Image 1 (cartoon, rainbow, N blue to C red):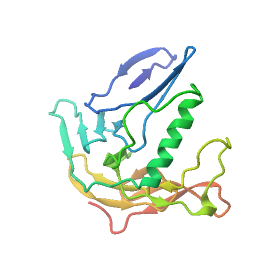
Image 2 (tube, rainbow, N blue to C red; image 1 turned 120 degrees about the vertical axis):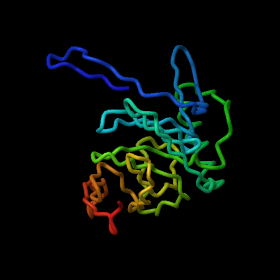
Image 3 (spheres, rainbow, N blue to C red; image 1 turned 45 degrees about the vertical axis):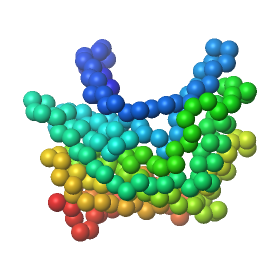
Length: 222
């Protein structure tokens, strides 16, 4: 949720986003008072963001449902049905290895307990509200193999290396729920901010250093 602080730093108010019935089944490891949990990156997640007009926008990643909790109005629900995006067997095996590695740092004897790795991606991967009020919904698309020259060596040599990534793709909605269109981003980029048809994204420059790059959507979305 959100916390509003007064000028002197004391608590002024707090807000909690509306909940949605997202089925989440984390994998949990416990040992000698220590506890860790993680989930599959392909499983449904719950998302929320704050709209500049003063209300929460929440999303159910499992069935692509976005709810705009507008003040003094009925909530507005956006629901989409997209083709299922399968997860390759090799990618599922790498995801399983990542979860095992993560939880065995807490409990070295941890064995698999929990749901199997999903064979399809959740349709909604993230939610972002731009400063102009447009809603950017990151959607599932087929994974691509990462070129060998772009594979970053893990900080821990025992950590499994992921050879797949999901290209960033978004569907845009107006505040009234209208679908404006779809935008595909370059590989290795991350949406930072947007205003109208101008977009700022974080990429890697020619020296492999992070750099903010400005793009323009053409033709513009209305």
